[in-house]
Length: 237
Ligand SMILES: Nc1ncnc2c1ncn2[C@@H]1O[C@H](COP(=O)(O)OP(=O)(O)O)[C@@H](O)[C@H]1O
Ligand SMILES: [Mg+2]
Image 1: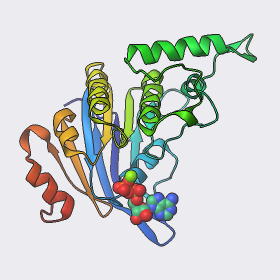
Image 2: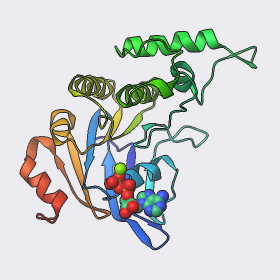
Image 3: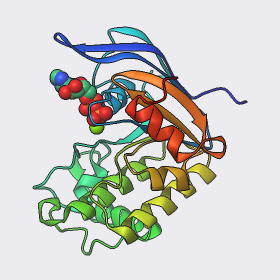
Image 4: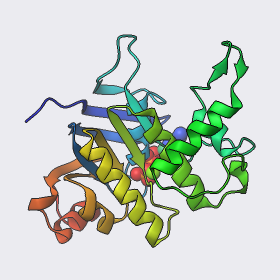
């Protein structure tokens, strides 16, 4: 097997006296969709934030490929969406990488053109890119956040509950986007409570329970009953 682009080993994380992660390990590979499932409070979102560096692990190792400056080569869609409501769609999509004229003035036309192109390429229909994000539905915001992450074009893509606010058709659309990410060689980490979605799109699944990795299985080799058993604790390791 190829070298993992992302690896967690024996990661522990405390919030004060609350132990959020007790012992988490996983390895993600290029060209693979790796699902992470587990009950509410299992530690999935904390794990995502440790990978991106929002939180620091108290123990263990987080190995992430990065660029020469040591930046982690990661694009992420957080569960608690990080869009700015008062800014429009185009501005949100460009945050962190705003196009400038003469190196100073925000180049609005370019920003809008680029946002419209990315949304068009992904077949996302959210209307005018000048619409403030605060006026969008939950599903539309989620799709804009996903489009922004896809636009970053990083080797590692973290998606924390990307379909939580979506209807059937939008969910299928996000599934198509995930398939394209895999085909283009990205390592996709997909946190989801939607086992149908996981079984349709993931190559492997890691189950977290009470802050611990219960195990990792290939989707081709595991049944839903077994995964549910691992989530609930009926099956241990
Ligand atoms: N910033 C925080 N401060 C204190 N406790 C937190 C914080 N973030 C998460 N937790 C706790 O850590 C545990 C794991 O939470 P979380 O990672 O959000 O789980 P999941 O995403 O699997 O539902 C929970 O007990 C949660 O209450
Ligand atoms: Mg969560």
